[in-house]
Every structure is written in C-alpha cells, then in structure tokens.
Image (cartoon, rainbow, N blue to C red; front, side, top):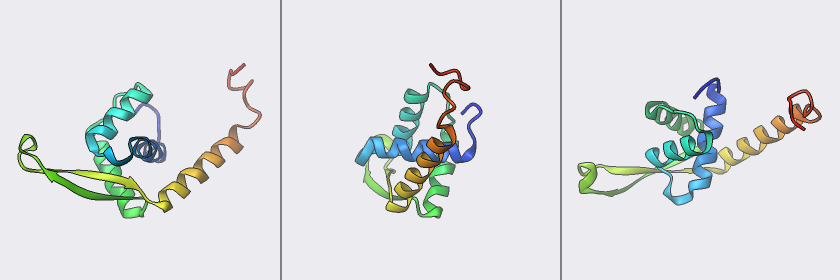
Length: 109
C-alpha cells in the first residue's frame, strides 16, 4: 500500500470493516481498500493484518455459511469491537491534533 505504515493499514482495514458493516470479509475489505484509496493492496497483507487485529482484540470474526462456489469453505466475516472503535477514535483525534494549522504548509488552500 504505497508508503503507508503497518499502523496505517490496520486503521484503514478497520475503517473498511466499519463501512462494510455485516458484509465485511477478506475479499470485500480488499475491494473497499482498493476502491477508496486507489492503491493496489495484497490480499495476503489484509489477512495478516486481520489476524493481528483479532489478537489485539480490535476485531472479531465468525464463520459464515459454507458455499459450493468456495469449495465448501465458509467466508470469515469480521466486525470491529468496541476496543477497535476506541482505537480508531483516538488515532483520528491524534491525526487532527498533529495536522491542525498545517494546511498551508501541506499545500492545502
């Protein structure tokens, strides 16, 4: 994902999950990231980050219904937990505090 760091990717993935709601699973998260950022994201990176977010307690996953088109494997649906939402709010507030007043220096009008 370009020059984004690991923490940035974690937050972008959680934001994609929030946007997708109950329909968030690996491929839909990947599509949402690419659609909104215009950046090529590797599916493997998304799955690694999803596992890391689950270990951190920021997201939870559940198995969906098995489908023949997936070879009988169920999709793993993901949702952001309250701890993850709190982390997103804190990161957003930090970003806003750090960029406050820098519009002209960052080339914004």
